[in-house]
Image (cartoon, rainbow over all chains, first blue to last red; front, side):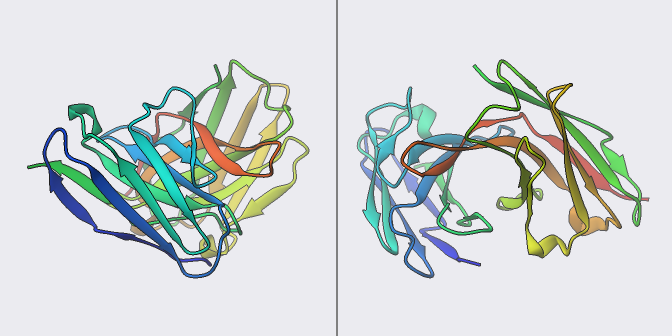
Length: 107
Length: 123
């Protein structure tokens, strides 16, 4: 299985901050990388697919970049509704696998 | 707008079989480019893919489940189902059904999720 490792596991930030979350794959996955946001008690919600494509309806403050093994999710200006847990997921190979998650908390 | 809804018992005894059904509305389960999936999340933990099925009946199973799972589809009811045999406490989780979509560029992603259902394995 391809292992996905996110860092940090958690972070504290303030409204308006620029936030960056990284995801590293255990082998090259080209750009077969997706990002999801999950709020407590809710299903995950797709933010970014194909490493950098913004899902319809997702605010422009979210962006993704990277290829190969190293990827980044950036929130340009953190909003109150962005406090949540974020997961990366590779779709390069089966089984599809997720990172362990990054919890973004209010400072 | 595709919607998915899980249904099934919330409590299963150890060694028994967990059975869940996902009803798809707002779209056909026979649509191209859709792999109908089961994903689970133990309390306070991360996400694990269980497997998926195409409308033709072709399936993928995550080897981590050691083939304890069966995924089936009923196109006449626009539903797909999961059975997980010989459950233990480690199978306690929120179970999500989801659509794993593959686009014209060959990328795969989950664009629709059910709300999730908590299944507890306990005597």
